[in-house]
Length: 304
Image (cartoon, rainbow, N blue to C red):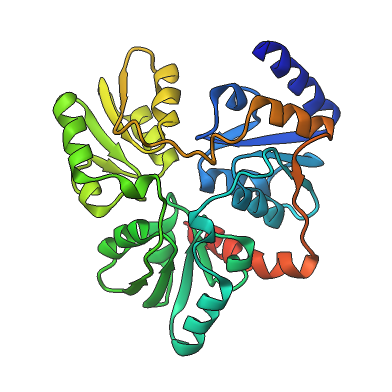
């Protein structure tokens, strides 16, 4: 049944002149029919270079918004209309504008896990993969970093010379991990290296052998000849890596590292979106796209 639906999707994708972008956290049967699979930064770069008429996004709402901002002339559809991101919606544009009015010498740096509305009042956007490069290349010394306090703490630790203010937001999945979780995983698998996402709390990151984005974690495994790894990010990454490297062992740091919003998208959602009976088309005015694109374009310029 799954193979039959995948074949229909591949046929429809060609007929609709559609490019399917899928985040690494979605189910394997979806990544198998995607044209590009990656983390937030990799998908942002891919969205900007799509040469098809339509982009079908398998991920969450803010990611599809970002794809539309970067490819305004394309039809962009989110496969699962209700797939959101709690972190992206933690703060409002009004809160950011109020801060900027009270602190005009601060630049606002927003994690890409934010709504398009927040991007409209942001000076520069970052992803977990690009955050260190972007902040390091910024001329501004005073920075408000939102919404993820853990990623912000990781950036702040790497740039003590900058005055970085953090707000108390973050990913509810990564954020609930503890040092005890990391210690337990390492005690169960003493020969494994611990690779964690910077959305995890600092006390977890301190115990890691490597800290990086989803794409960075996968690249680390690509480039290192080690047999066992504990994966401290969404549980699907351990699964993806186990398929890619069947001779190696991959252990999720915690069985609770599951993002329900990323699991919202099903193969049937992809199929129905291509049929035109499902999905949510992302629509924005030209003026809105222009406002929201500034911070993303600056990210792409500074990530050198």
